[in-house]
Length: 398
Image (cartoon, rainbow, N blue to C red; front, side, top):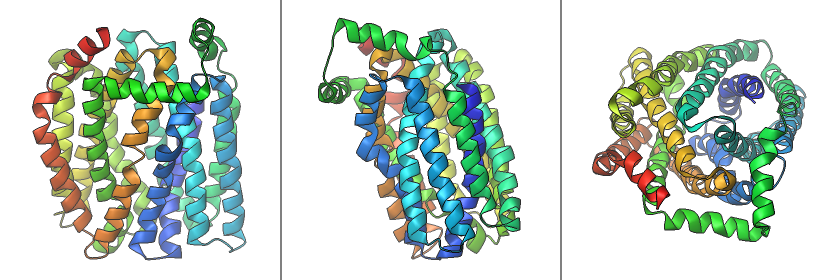
């Protein structure tokens, strides 16, 4: 699973820089550019719940492999369209949507495997190492080389991406079968259920768990703010701060330094200070930093602030994921994960589109608005978050 993740992250890193650069070569409309992020996230709203139920019923190896194989084919077609000079912004939007659907399937499956493969005491370490490999491969290898490959030929990053997803699909098929079927089969033998019933169960489970429900709603509203702030960030750093296009991938890599430090630090600081305190620090400080980024006078100040934001938000993400994996039964994880991601990620397209509208007036405005709202939510949620680890465990036990 880790090998498959590394290869797909390399592909994602190449796309991370290539897609925004392709988009601004096709249009300078902020709303259309922000719509790319919206199309990637929209499948979480539409398909996360049924895909989550599917993950609990079907061989997870085939879901991982199938999702990556489809991504390989779709991006390959896009590369051909670019090479033949037939691509438009609307082709790019359609591709983003299909890739988003596949991302729902791959991510839900991967997160469902973590509590099967690892013991509870190793959740934070496992999530941390996956985060490190994602940041290093995606941010420090894929993104930097993408800008330079893009400069050679605009279609090359997309061909590279297509090949990477194909290799990732093959690696996914090599995952030992016991990590894909044991819990699912045991659960199916105990209580056979219908597909629709599985989806309804995931929704009701999350609704009835008071602590989890509030945690999901809090992260959902803040996720909208962050997607709003970063929806047109490529326009902000290139048009407003004057960064050369060829260095966009390098800029993304520099930001990744903070994420790596955060991933390395998360298990240790959680053990020393407690998961709840570190999570609270992470989300409050990242929200404040998000607001301050809007006042950046140049690319150097913005890069430093973005790096610090990467550090603090990574602390939050790793420990948040560990809480979910601790309190949600693994045989139900796909359904519950799909339900919460429907809210958390499914509503992010709203933030992206709002960011595009705000950027029409001023490219700094999405950062201002997203930063102010997320900071307010984080501060108001501090008392809840400071006890989240203990509260969620108690609710799960009851």
